[in-house]
Image (cartoon, rainbow, N blue to C red; front, side, top):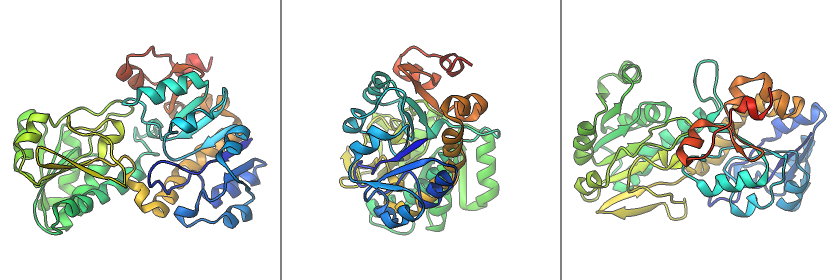
Length: 358
């Protein structure tokens, strides 16, 4: 199979879809890997590293999109990239379609087979391809929040969501001597955090009253709520933001799925913050891109078996044999094949098994 790795063009996105060790696995299995010149430089990976692993280096993205049967990226294709997609191509990357009707419509029109990292599941019910980036974003959030607050220690922090990102954010926040409260609706998640972090962190069951009260008192609010594939629920209302302390900060990790504050909108590493009602909002959609090398290798460690399956077996057999990979199928030749995406965008849902004719 011809596997293509274009250079990421999203603002300040330095990660890359494949590392040389993964390329070597693919070429050893007889596949042709085409990498765009300079694609890995931001993650400390040279063109020579890729050539040594058996990849071909090409000058521009057009050559990648024209030749590849399987495209492996990190972030969703931007408008200019979506124009290059061809019917029957397999796109394997983070997509976050629920809050993005334009991207969804473009992918539907292109005829591609789009598999989203963030909705691939595991036998344990986890999201294995999202987990490493959630860990990175969770660990980054208290630091960027503290930078926005201009205070490195102390303060009162509230974490909405006790999942992977929220747990890591709580761990780092507690280490910075902050008073930390984690809010979640899952008693097991709260119990797990309490057992892991002990008295350093307070846990609270999520209700509207709890969210409003704690946000009004907080110096820093970190939003990490996740509903797999679906748009993030707007837990922080505009009225709550207005009632927060002047100079307080919201770091919305959930912005990839639309954000969990009504006042959240996507920002970039180049212009990461804006202010609403004297509350600073940090809503960068690709936070882990700032630590590109760590994030790239962490991502490749978990995507490798799926990339190999898609290349070795072809998408139809790989998706047919693996129900967990099949959960990642969001768009198939003009059909929406993930229920949460279809529901969020009010589009017709097609069962992936029906689309694949299994």
